Image (cartoon, rainbow, N blue to C red; front, side, top):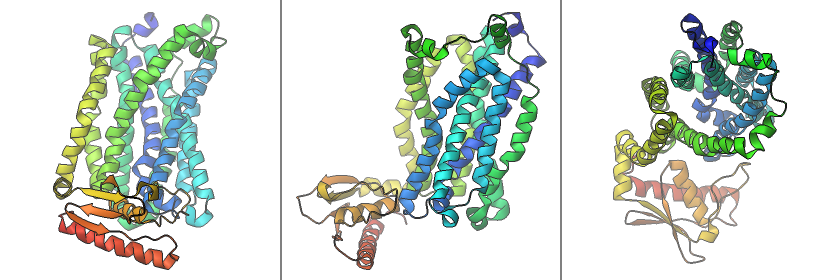
Length: 440
């Protein structure tokens, strides 16, 4: 890498510290949304039902990930043309402005359908900015790092995701404690977003102290960036095969492991196991703190044994641990539910032709068939079930252990009659679940 990259001491610590701090602030902005999904669902998707609103809020969170690759491509090209420092300043400003804007965005009750549209647009901006920021920070540190410490030093950049999540959860817990649960759900949830304005100012101040990397200066001295970087990267097999390998062999697996571990676990505890939201926040915070320095450790280990064994080891560990891990989590967090599911599993016996997907993004589907009524009751209660086909035309039944509960055919009923029928089925199913030992 050259002598400039081999320099040790305060300069190297400054590069790593400034890059990591700024990226952690960006992850804070990104994860505030994911940590407040339940509340955001109520404020911005208020007209489609509880289950559907939550799904839409999760999809809005996911939009940020969809545009991250585009942000990486655009800001990677931008960084080669204008320098790493300028790119850092642009990405962090874009992220901060989008986050503060979410904090002041009117909700569905105030401006109707425009609220979720604007929310999705701001999430796109966040994902676009993070796509450029995260890769750019890793490249910037790698371009300063000596060969034998590249994994260790860039490992500090990987900790920024955990640090951002720690910051987000800490601010949420403190704000909820100060203003109270009801006020937080009503308006206090905006405070963590607005706090990003202060973090943006700090991040810009830190980033302004950085200089361009030695590798970028050398590239400029040798004639600037390549003229056709995308064509050389994607349309020539020599380079394109490494891009495809990195994308499908590494990044997709890494993303599945990380976001399942942090965010689906949160959804599972809160929505399926019915653990109190504040408790979920504390548990996720504790696990995140405990795991933060492992990024640095495995980065250091990759310098010793190579990148491939470390990555494969992590993927294999996730493969063998996720299913028993979630089963263990169920037994630990809600043992009554785990015992009831084992003792009296729930089965929906219905004609498959009468069963619709329980998802209504516009809130206009009635879900009036006997199958849909039964499944919507179970879904809203967070009860897992399996399907069993019944003869055509048969009214759906819900089997809880050995007890069967008949649903009601609601097709053709008036709105009030359908609501009454749904309530009747819900009461029957809840009685059967309670008798089987399912917790409220």
